[in-house]
Image 1: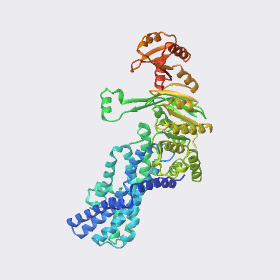
Image 2: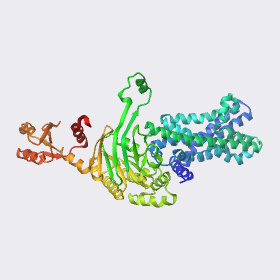
Image 3: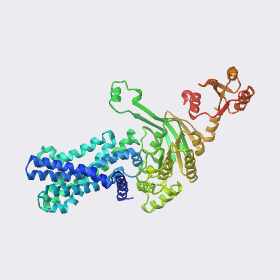
Image 4: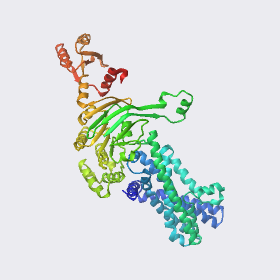
Length: 263
Length: 329
């Protein structure tokens, strides 16, 4: 049994659950509307606070952040796992639960990709920013990569939330607020004190967003590639941390008896 | 196949209150909960073994340890030749787990998809998954509903799917924890038939229950457990004899028959007579099964025609066992 099969099966469960929760209508009129409002709000704040360049900076940052926000929603899937009572069953199976989690919430990445692409198209139409055409062509693969790294980061937080499931919403909000605030969505990372800026090197979104900004500014391709490579490294880091941490969580649960069936 | 030696599990309550109590030297007795203590158990290959006990006796804790969900705090346990604490992964490849209740299945996917998912988790060869899933669905009678989401299933259907899920890895040892809990009588009967089939295949089965009838119907031997300690391990026939030795007779007396209670108490074969809450009702505890016909004849001769014999509940058997063994339990 390969890791690919485990991730595939887990992803299938997640996609089926997602289809039960959302229809196209509820997704567009509920979730999408909320995301568009958020991006437009920040775009307008940028416009009021500064010049056109500032407005476009904030707008692009928030469009890309939509991807990261949605990917971190994998934390809510961990809560669902606990509610369904499948969590201890997974621990008692011969498969690493972390591997399951690397697939269990992949629907959030796909949904995030759809959301962010749609928001990008909408705000481009609404605000007519002066972004290079390359954004339209290459934004999607960049967003997908950001989604994967934010997802791996979210899966790590999901593992943490299994231990403190009462605080799962706190984990979710803390998780994406950290990205929104410090990873260059509204202000450059260099705005923050050096230790914080250094820390954001290891957070998803930082390098991927920088790559999209380079694309928008028609910067050199080599710079874009370098930034995306760093984003891949960040994704790998969080994926490894997730696998290790799930093992630790399962081990601790076996020791202290916290592998409960339900929340 | 299952070897348990001096197994113990103590839960320590977490949180500030418990910590303060421990630091202040006033560790409340509740801050440490002894769920299992000195449990010894040996289940040979092919045996269906029942763990009987009331709620909170430690049955589920024992199954959790044996199925690698929980570590013991003392003693050791081996399942299928492997230590549950140090060789958990090897144990997991040889066992199947079936818990009673609504939890443990993905309700938004179909029964077949659930089996495919769990087959992957149990590292079943991809080429085998489809065939084995179909065989199991047929076996548990879910073929017609195999492609429907589980959320529409009744309790009995879910439980049968739980059993199929537990068997997907073709386990040598199967743990069934209160498997018929909440099922209606017909579903319970069908489920027990399935367990009989598994038994006939030579699988080792450990089943926990608080239902004596279920234990008698399914098990070769049973262990009575209470307060985390095994009280007795015997064959079901022996336990049955222990039960029949504690039969009781419930009677309802008319007003003019009230004097009979005192006479009954002195009757040979009567252990004691307890008055019940309803006016004129009483419960006669006999000393042995042989005494029952004698006492019944005496009652009928005395004109008592409202009477009923019955077997004691499991709880009453416990009271007898603990009472008889005193501190030696």
